[in-house]
View 1 (cartoon, rainbow, N blue to C red):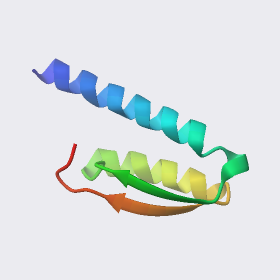
View 2: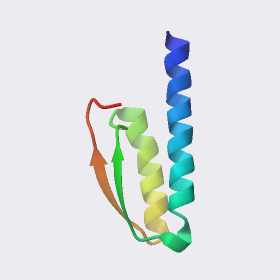
View 3: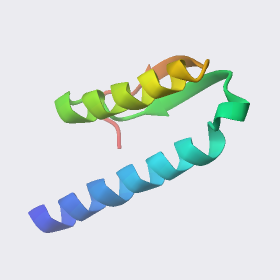
View 4: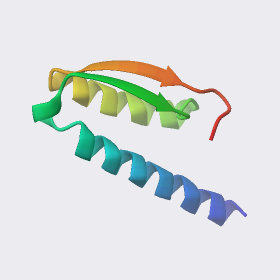
Length: 70
């Protein structure tokens, strides 16, 4: 069960990162409303890295976390 959950987390993270990379390119930097379930410690830290990178490119990030979702 643990292996299956790990694989699911990796696949979800990969899909999320791909979507962010495709839709939030530097040329499109603006405002992003990000609905996510990344609310626990490590997930929140990873999301903060994405948020900081987006801000460096001139974007405004509107965080919309959903506790207990996913």
